[in-house]
Image (tube, one colour):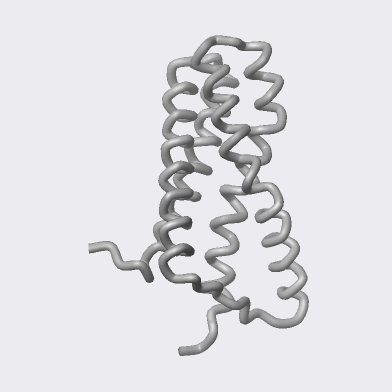
Length: 144
């Protein structure tokens, strides 16, 4: 049974899975493997959607904001990553859905135009989501 306190780990795993799918999808399209690219990108969208649902369930059910326990140079590093993540994250669902929709409809020029923005933002948000989890719950977690 999944407990509410397990959701931050689940969120990090979903972000990590989305990252892997995004990179695999990029690798596939670079080799003109369109069917593989489509499958990887749909999987990335699925993992990102599952992440968003899990994230919202966690925050709406717990109202918990875990404080960052790191000190020194790590505080501005953490808050810089967190700020950029929070600013860019709301764009991901919109950009990703537009990119996937255009790709599925084989609107190649329009797909490429949106992917120039969508891919790096989506990848950055996925990677930094994992980093934020690691910084909060493992690398700088308060002693228990």
